[in-house]
Image (cartoon, rainbow, N blue to C red; front, top):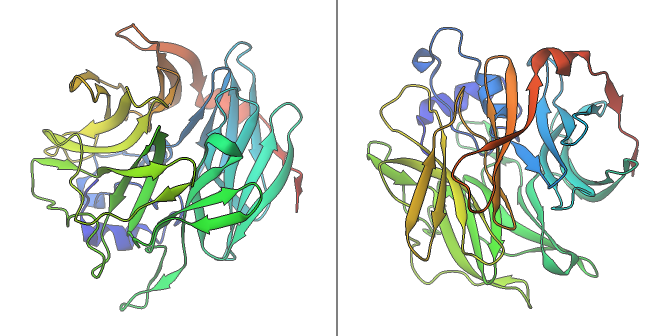
Length: 355
């Protein structure tokens, strides 16, 4: 995932730092007239299960980020907010019973990882950090993987979340740091048997775990993979610089993987377009075959794989579709068609979060 470095610093003033912690940005001069950057950024974030999904919503940049829960069978929409914070980085358990999300407190007061029971929306804080918490996912053994970075003041005096690493929450022992990579950007964690996939950008100078990107290259990827020990819940640091995966024409990022590792989905965009439009790619690592599914509107969200079904959302100017490609099928099926008007009519509910 490569963008123009100069654009990052100027645009991050306007939008939540956590929301942008893993998003491609472009200089304003590169956007088509009327391009909605905030909507495009929000469109990358999707949580999905077999029965429901969650997307990020807000009516303007002046409004705090909220979560919209969509029930597939009934089409019911429920919008959630939390005073004094942005609600970000949602994750749903495959059965849809549990929702995880990051509650980013305003004015850099830290971040909370919140868990909710979706049957009655009883919620509780399970982790607090003075920095960031995002990209949380539930894995085997009742564990939760997530990404965290402290606030870092750079040589230019700007404060950034630029030392990202992978952490784990153990049911009995609590949080534990798994890596010491200090990536500028890190996200899209996915565990497949004894492998962990992730997207990363910007290696630390003294820890060249991943290569420096070449923004001029026609073939780019920010997708990497490392061995993961599911019994010990450990990630061994690599002995050499990792090679990016799924390198082909364009820019590849945001991986998801099936639990058995036989299916990987990710996003890819062309390098020769001004506003990056991401399409969905579904790959079989064993046969090395790929299927490209072109996304309408502003492009596809990060994918989610449940069993061997691939979920993604696509965002248009005033609508959002949540879709799935079932195992054995070649096209996407729409599970929910959400208009901006319907979101606006849905009153936001203040979450009651047990501290």
